[in-house]
Image (cartoon, rainbow, N blue to C red):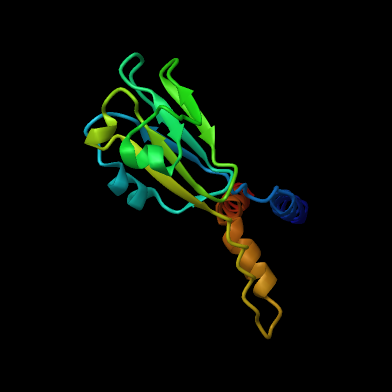
Length: 167
């Protein structure tokens, strides 16, 4: 009986050690955009903000009926693609990385821009991670670890409980 308990405790420690070795979460997000006419993309931006440097926009659209054109602010305001920075019209998807902190402007040059098929995205630097709460008992680091790895710790506890029931 004592050997089984030691094995279960060792397994739990092994799972916790694996949690500590997990890489930090990446800041880049994949943001999907259903790029279609008659959509108010100003509302869309408000619902999906904030956008950070290194996020990815993935435009999904109907081939032959829409395109994604990156323009400057003047092109955005006038729905004018004549001085496009980048134009993508092949396929049905287009992935674009927001690799600078600035405002990006996108329009559709198939005439739908005037109906609202345009997008202005302002990117920000990713805020620094919050420092762990300081505690006089020194448990602030453990609490921060527990919060950041809650799902894995929960799974480890569930496995440990199952092992103890078997014993």
